[in-house]
Length: 285
Image 1 (cartoon, rainbow, N blue to C red):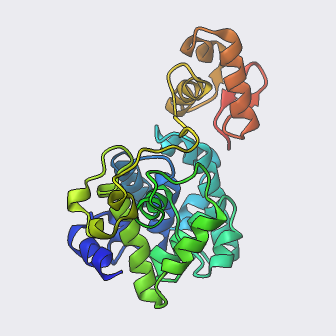
Image 2: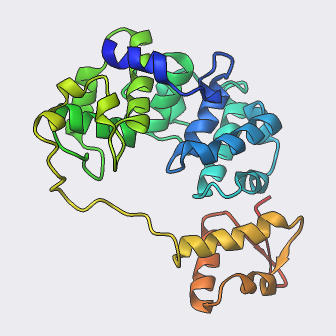
């Protein structure tokens, strides 16, 4: 533990949600935004959100559509709706304060096991297993001796993480942050910087000669030409408008009518877009 935590103390990035005055709401917003989105893209949007909505109650007072609008081009915009729903629940059920307890966090709309553990650990210094992609990759290499973890988190991974988790709450919280940072900065997916790793000498994968991945194919994330791209273009038009948008204006964003209609229907089904009479569409209110 000490090797990794000492490395973290020296090399950790100065991120706004890690600062002593950040607060639990800043941590929660960051955790929603960082899911499948790199830090560099999250930083400016996180700052804008906290400036506009410094407390959960501030966001809860706005319409869900404003959350979607402010989400910008972070991608996976359903996260904006979930964060708005969580903020509303916090304002209505928790006196406007992000809950301390894992069970209460987990009960919030849109908050899963990982996010509940991360907020409890990073915001309140609680002892929880925090397993994101970076941590899973570090444990896969250092402990298990394989290049990549399974595509989905397994019970075996949780057992490994639990066995490694320090008993002391404060140390456990530092360990969670440190292993995540190690995966992000050193033990990268494509080009691990083993020479900079504080536990390279104990890494089972490296000691085995860094064998190539021989498990199931890793999932790629294509974007060009997908429904995700079409959805993004449709939402961009709606975000830029202060009022309802005619369908004719949305029809200009993508050349293929069947895919365009499917993408728009999906946005409506997900609650990201509201259809109105007269072939008009808007962000949810």
